[in-house]
Image (cartoon, rainbow, N blue to C red; front, side, top):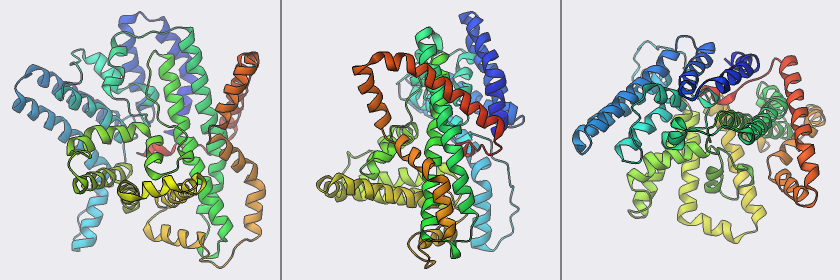
Length: 467
């Protein structure tokens, strides 16, 4: 799917966009639907049915919720149908194997494991489609009676497989009437190329370091090698996911849509709570709107707040994957956010900001070990090695890796902060012509370099396509 997706973007995107711009307004949504189906089925020719089924369920549920306006019991029935059907699709295709495996281990049974392939992006498009019926039931939006327009919302190909999670209310007005002009086109191209550079030039290259280290034996690995490896993944997942989000936001802008921001320099955070306000913003907003607030948020006392946070973070871990690693990863963040809510935030506000940042990054990095290792035992062994378990502080291998990837790590550190944005703001204020003329040249260079890497490289994973 990764190669196929990029093939689609590079071979067909110019043609798709030219057709899109040339079409009369009344045909644009239909073309979005067709291009979205083509993009998804290019790599998932069978499971595109699952996406269309989710779309149809929520469209029909929305019509009935609208039809029975004022009759809350009847509306609630169709809301429940929408939620249950979408969660059932997730449960069957994403979690059935995990559930069967654990039942067999616990009870000694021999239930056959279905081993169903995971439809790419199922966690994204089911959440996106389901948000429509929930918001309609809550009276936040108006019903969409046009099936083409609703299906276009779900199948918007720029963000269909890896987000950001776009809720219906984010694009409701633009589905019916959107502005496309040269300013939007330029802003979209700049955003797309920025994301492409983050993904191809930075994430792919630093990801090679993590791939090498992860394949090594932790028992004989030096402390420095272990830290270099997990730092590489820390940057890979950020630039991979935020890069794809930027590409999607840019493409959306080129089509007249304003998708929500998904990242805001999360590695500059000085608490875990702040980190999650800056990382995968649309997922955090989804859980806040549809789980945390309906449970009562922080309005029903400390005990209930702790419970609500625990539920949200357990679900966040489960959302990311059918594995005990992901569940423990979610629990880790839940525990730390609860502790910050209860007392730790006040401590972090009093200590020097460097130490609060260090505390945050240490926990985030340890969390990434859980996130991308095979099982909890492997994660535990890796963490032990990070803190000297092998008895080897540094060796020739670590020195070799540091020399080969030192520049890329330095680039990652710089690019994960807002220093570049602040520098551009300063230059724009003092010498705007440099930015005005230099930016197009810079972005063109990034585009050409990214294309060269894609043509030459075989390593090009999209990490969040698997969620």
